[in-house]
Image 1 (spheres, helix red, strand yellow):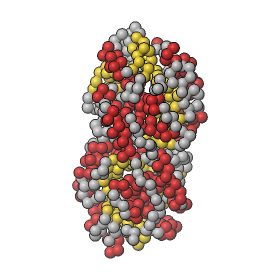
Image 2 (cartoon, one colour; image 1 turned 180 degrees about the horizontal axis):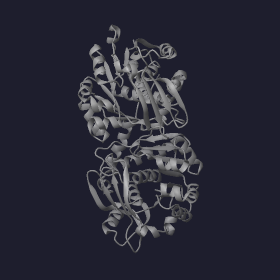
Image 3 (tube, helix red, strand yellow; image 1 turned 180 degrees about the vertical axis):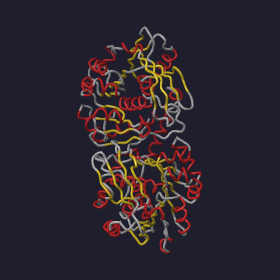
Length: 306
Length: 306
């Protein structure tokens, strides 16, 4: 039997500008990307909040993919909105506007069913809310967590409480430096692991993601894509791929974790091929399997004898 | 019998500042790094120029390693000097001073012996000089070449003449974008290959290096090192490792090239562990073999079945 998987995070309406094209009010948010990706391998439970203006078509899309939306709260007011602009290199970006709207009053409430979830992903929300979720789940097999510079700078004590209860922390390189005051990633990762998570994944955008665990370091490159249409959600897609692979493959060994890293990088590489979640609307199991194999071609080399 | 390997480039005295430490007038220059690394696998011929002030100890060091210095010219005046400062992240750097000195009048002259070299590396020098070297060598098996933004911006026609006669171009990501006006690396690499080189290697600093050839794309990550003492010469060490591996292994197949990429990344990872060429003074064959194996651990994953 497959394990149960829970994500708590944001469902948002994104407006994205790239040097080539723009889109307004498309489906976004960490929990949307995570859950849409997770359904590629099995069911997923979502806890988030949307406003009265949230288009029914997005609800239908997620439900039809197999996302359990019984934890999707609807609140009076508007849905969380984010507007951003990507630079020419399609890596750097500036946030033009963030309107929390209904997200400001969000309080994750888990049904009895959801409390029994085996795998839990705490997307990037206020650490106090992450803590609230951890207090509700009963005996998770694995807890993974994301965070951001704002919480590292303003909510460190609460964030540290969260980290003590987390198995895998996913952060980007700048956040790792900010959290640990160490610029060297090996040293930063070691310091993060002292804070609680036995496994740390440092996301480096188009350079890929590095896993640090008891076995050592593993590097999942970012698959080279041309053209990159919209990088939004790549990190949450990576997390969705990684955690769902662990939940549904249930191989939590170092070897399984390394496969999960590549699987996460594979789905993230599809994410950037279109705006919003659109690439996942058409992505087939065969395309995904082929991309995972292509990661082998990208990194494999014969033994070097000196 | 091993193939003959020639490098034409700079021998310099570097002054390096890092947030932790500084060194003045240490041995530097592309040809120094390249040749010191190449001798780990076999002999190498060096063509460069130094001034009257060049310390004899550096000559002795290179000679004792097995570098054929019969092409090292000594000119009236001072040796080429470079002074740079690394930023906190130990990746970004600013050049504080460049004094070409005797390098300004450098004209590579190859002895009859050197003209018969099988493998040629044209380090980053004026494209007219690179062309002069190509006119002197008779029937090289493989020509690899480096360049920089200055030549791309000011000597494009000459550089394009060079590229038509080059098998492997090694450049960094910014140079690739500058050369091709393409920000996407896949597209940039494809455009470079249209200019002549059948193989393009794009160096991305601490993200590693990507190879683009007929077979596809291969990513050699940068091995995570703690602490990084001095990144100067990492790119030239990479080139020295790569080309000497090809010259002395002589497996020019796609599989051999991928091993050469990893071998280059391995020596580059040692380069940054100390100032100047100092790490190569003590580096053992066993350490090098172990680092190559460690690249396997860093990148290897079991087949993913979906």
